[in-house]
Length: 199
Image (cartoon, rainbow, N blue to C red):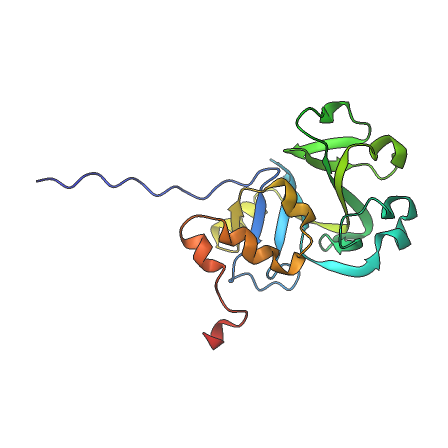
């Protein structure tokens, strides 16, 4: 009697806009240890994203007064990454299923109603129908092939993002929550202790 063929294990998910990078335990770079990164743009020239779980103590209203009232809890600037920390990116979630993001002034959709809004746009032109907003100081960037190399060496898990991930109020629990909803071994990774040596 012959054994049934074993289905090949799926390969790593390629990174793309709207996907999440979840730092693997092997990633020790202090800029990215235990982070969750939302990828905003991925192309042949590289990738760009923002770290979702590094809040700063600085209120958005202190730096961008006109946007402060629209900021999601916690209403602070987030450290988006080590590149361009003096600049700001605003990630937003727009309206419901009937909303047409293409018709929104100053908005560029990334995936599933999540996108970037130009902070130079007058607030009153974008405020209506805005479900969530978070402002990031700086971003994470990778040159051509660099992110793929880091994924291949086991530094990142690439997983699907959900619209609410970028605006999660409990940023301290985001890393575990995202992993916990993944299938198979990735869900187990969410249970590792903060210090593996204590296990």
